[in-house]
Image (cartoon, rainbow, N blue to C red):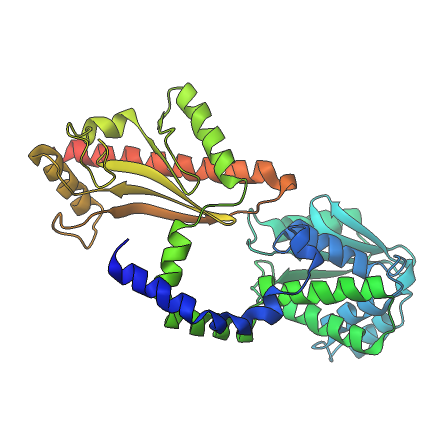
Length: 387
């Protein structure tokens, strides 16, 4: 380790008390963290459906569902009669459904002839005209019912269909905090709601106080924290899933898998790119091996980064010229081979390390690999045409 790096780590350790400001976030027990449900969209929908159901065992009655309806009608003052009818509804007549025809949350009252649909997006966005399709389904299934369509996102993202109204997680938090302040709850329900408010503020919304403190600490000890983040091992199951997928692809002859990988860096190669950037004879690349490139997964907590990494050290003339062509075609800022490593086609992915979402993790990883191999094919075609 270089002296400069050692000094950065020493300075950080001597100033370790700077982390005390984070204690009120880091030392709190939170049920959602334990269940790994803090960023999982399906879990948020489950909690919201539970809170919205006036007949559930939280004993809130119709308080939360009324708050949501009131939030919806706040800006509809021109429809005074309709608003009055909404507020006088029997909210206990509503049944709450999860994933009804793929709609996240659906509330239906046959007595009131009313339907409310909530499409919930946490860490993702609308796709495939979801809102339009869901509206058409609801219109078909409930032709004579009054309808309220809500698009729930962290920051008030604009819905693609104008018939959907915007609701944010800030609205959810404000309403829950009002309920906590004004309602007597059992200790279990109070803990559940407090934990849920906390996890929304920390993981869904942007907690400004937390962000400011983290930025202050990071700016003061940037080099040390970057080193810690770079060299830490990945404690999640993600790396084992990546290795499993790469081994399967290697068995099928699609890639060349490097089994000497660590849990932090996982590398593989392809026959096609090996022809373009052949192995070094003296095994003296930047990695101290025979490779002058690698397709590299860098594993992080709940995330991964996939890229093509080039090295420019100790290359024979022909390979060096090929690397220069690649830099030119990829329009990088590098014009000379004065770098130790250079990343191309860098893709960062957030994934959820949750046993119930293994298939989702696998699909995310497979898509990233497929996109990378597509990029490789396009690059090699360009090199062939410019030969």
